[in-house]
Image (cartoon, rainbow, N blue to C red; front, top):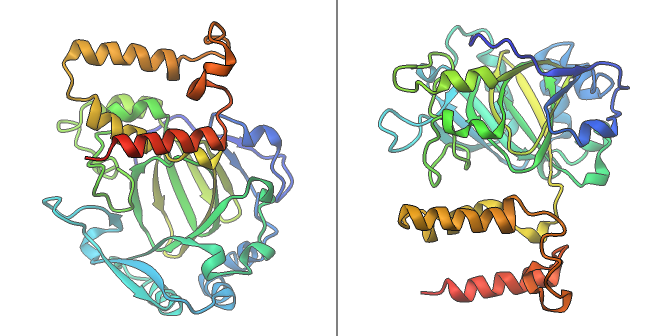
Length: 338
């Protein structure tokens, strides 16, 4: 285990299932102890892994799920293969009951195969789960997913939405880094990654500080959160997180939501366009464009453009609305045609 002294702040006086408003607006991660203690899923999981699995079977609608299988040699690490030409696991479409059977069958193994069902939409596979285990954030319209497996190790990555991650079976350890630590995490390729989001290439179990020396700086800013069944972690958007499942049977339920209109699209689209248009410019030109981006985007203040009459502001108008977004998108699509 990495020697991390910073612990994620805990909120221990909130009622189960009730999230204080200040938590949802926090820019720092927060642990909500016992948040899901009254949920049937958590109650069953505290009895035994078998009870937990049987509860999921009761809700399951028999649609095949996508699961990852890795040989015992992977030791739970969901990652690339040795030369990074592919991954160290294979994806299998299977009945969830079979996956649960295999997890229970290997629960006592010293070196079990890696078995992992990732980011499976609750409403599509377990449609009545939220009715019985509601996180009371329906007003945020979250996208809710379930993650099931054994002692998996998921490389550090970030997600664009905010996340309320609820540990509902087993134990998990989150190692968290603020967004500005990206330069110290040695991130891999954008186009090819195990979960569709670029990841840190560092093995947190055996970090190679000669190969990744700046990782020591990242660890100084890291925070750690250990969750048991019933605990929840509020994870603000864009925070890097490495997730290690500590039990032979683990279930996590995530609730993702964005605090910006969906018509704004995905920010990584702007990153890809910048890689295309800006990254290979001469250094002086890159710095000039950095100043322009700072002015219009990163350092923008509400009154910066008051010198422009409102009727000619166009895309600079605030707030951006659906129609303006459509015009910008159409203009970009037209200009990107080769």
